[in-house]
Image (cartoon, rainbow, N blue to C red):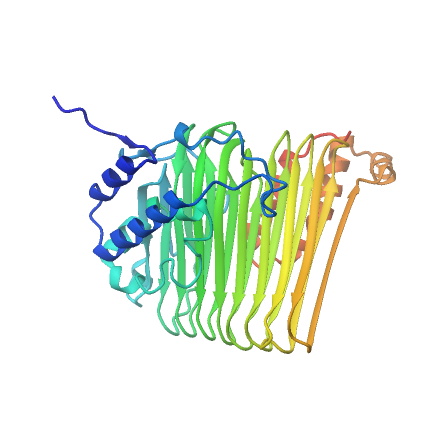
Amino acid sequence: MMETTTSLSFTADGFEAFVSNRDEPQWLVDLRTVAWKKYSELAWPARNDEEWIRTDIRQFKLDRYSLSLESPAETSATALLREGVELGGGCTSLDSQKSNSFISDKWSAKGVVFGSFDDIVRSHGDLIRPYLLRRAVNPNYDKFAALHAAFMTGGSILYVPRNVVVDEPFHGLSALTDGGTDFGHTLVILEDGAEATMLSETASENVAGGGLHCGAIELIVSPNAHLRYVNLQNWGSNVWHFAHQKAVVNRDASLQWTIAAMGAKLAKVNQHVGLIGEGANCQVNGVMFTEDKQHLSYHTLQHHEAPNCQSDFLYKAGLQDKSRTVWRGMIKVDPIAQRTNGYQRNDNLLLSTAARADSIPGLEIEADDVRCTHGSTSGRVDDELIFYARCRGYTRKEAIQMIVTGFFQKVFDRITIDSVRDALGLAIARRVREYE
């Protein structure tokens, strides 16, 4: 009797079996094949690579993971962002396999397309083909990007037609079982004049669970379109998290992108926003909160490719125990991008003497009519603030929670979605332990 394969390894044989197991358009098969060839040619990041010099992945072993082919059950992972929210659509995957998906009839009637990655590339392949890994994320950037492009599955796709304004958010949840693997791909496309809100989050069924995520996010914001995108990374504490995320914002369009990173054993994320049309505007709000021996590394690039554009990046991190964060930000201004207004800032609150925050802002400016500023701060909680609060009847932990919440308040104030602001604040407050 032939043995049934329920998982695939990340080898040449595994790739061939993966492609043959899927009913996909030929153009996508060709894209995967090119990506696999590139993956095979590229080396793993070296310890002396500038981008990886502060992030050690020597303990990461790809051969410990495989891609599941089993049909998933409903996940028990908690979705924080959809609490009390009326949704226009929702999509859930478990171990990179679709669990369920829906879209409101009133939005599908207006031509909005939303659902799992696997379903949409089959049902709307001609619509998706010009965008997928062609305008945003570069599948040849490094070995992780190529591996993702070869095996991407799970995740969600949202397409909003020209001038359609969607006033209900869409929600996507990618979940992992303990030891599972996720190669989810999120693609959001807003045509000219469209407006939408997308809430994406990742979570593990076991808060201490392990696993591998090798994913990508692509946001396409066309002229005069407006997108609010929220991304909550809440993997289990032993998950390896690698991701490439890029938005392209066109003429007179706007993007508000909120990122919260609280999970994973190690995270290495490249976040890139390209302002490609005159008058484009983006605001990025980043929240990181770490504990134990977590290592979160976020490399951001705000690339001004057109004149009269504005970018505003604010990242704040709170660190407990022996955790570490690395934030490396760059504002790049092309020669054509005159009258640029670029801002980036990273603030770190150290809640332990053993925690470490590396903050590396940077500027690369090739235009002469610009206003670009950056800044970074790192410090500990003022003991006088704790004493002041305790004198008024608060416990030490309650005092620290108030101080931490106040530290993040500037970011929370920029978030225009009440439910998201409340969920993030509560999630951080629950993680705060007594300050050393």
